[in-house]
Amino acid sequence: MRDHRLVLGKKVGMTQVFTEGRCLVPVTVVEVLPSVVSQIRTPERDGYSAIQLAYGERKVKNLSKGVLGHLSASAKESCEGLKEFRVDDVSGYELGTSIDSSIFSVGELIDVIGQTKGHGFQGVMKRHGFSGGPAGHGSMFHRRGGSYGCREWPGKVWKGRKMPGHDGSAMRTVQNLEIVDIVPGRNVVLIQGSLPGYNGGLVVLRKAAKAKQEAGK
Image (cartoon, rainbow, N blue to C red; front, side, top):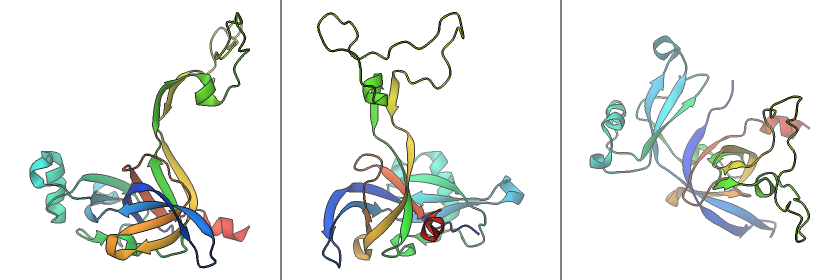
């Protein structure tokens, strides 16, 4: 059965630390947010298996009525938000159970899910890495995308064609990142490498789904 250990965190920023072998390693600092199981979805009642986590801290007066309705079942006074995750089996969870950085250990491989930085509307050179056209005067073709092939046939632009448009602000998963260090007192995890998103953004830390496959190669 798949390991569904996961926790929510807030990306703080990047720094670098020395390992035991005196190697300088770039790491991302993630503050693990205090989370509580606020709802448990079952196939018999809801048609699917999932858990809902109430994470962070916020005053009760600043919460919406919908959020308060969920929190009443978990006996938690306040939270910053709610996140729901699909799981195969909910038998290992109970309402009101707290989840923190102690579910992971140093040296373990994890997957990190986050929302990338948004770049707004961008052209093909920045969005897709096109080389562009001649930069001389009078070329009239500096940073354009060129022909998209919509003459008499096929008479349309094929779906998926690389064109200008909205760039960034998409969910991305970075797999098999190693946990370099854990600071339990401050609920901070140091993860080797970079993570998607901006500083202060919400990220999901979960047990690496393909760690065994990578180790077996």
